[in-house]
Figure 1 (cartoon, rainbow, N blue to C red):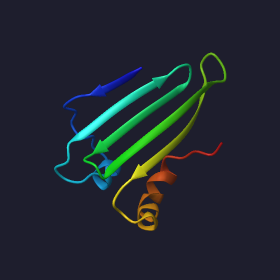
Figure 2: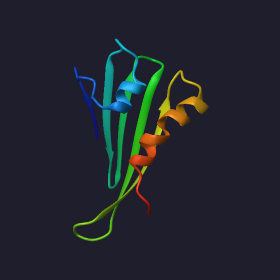
Figure 3: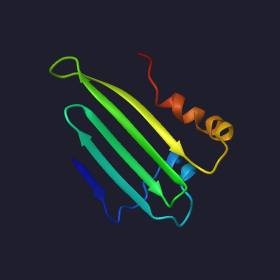
Figure 4: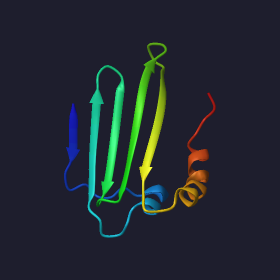
Length: 96
């Protein structure tokens, strides 16, 4: 299943402000690949994009483990992007 969100307002938060060029229109698509994969794709123009892919694995009736990978496409050099995103990445990660 795939859903595209039309006329969506650019999300707030440090990550979006950091990654998105001013004036570019947001394109947001979510995909569900049964039984356990979720993808969220955000595009800003042709040069900025990120894709979050999550795999959900049920552990118990009320607990689910999530494995997540996020990829980015920007005009920024990789070493600089990695350095700048590092504090956000560490804040949102939790050990096994």
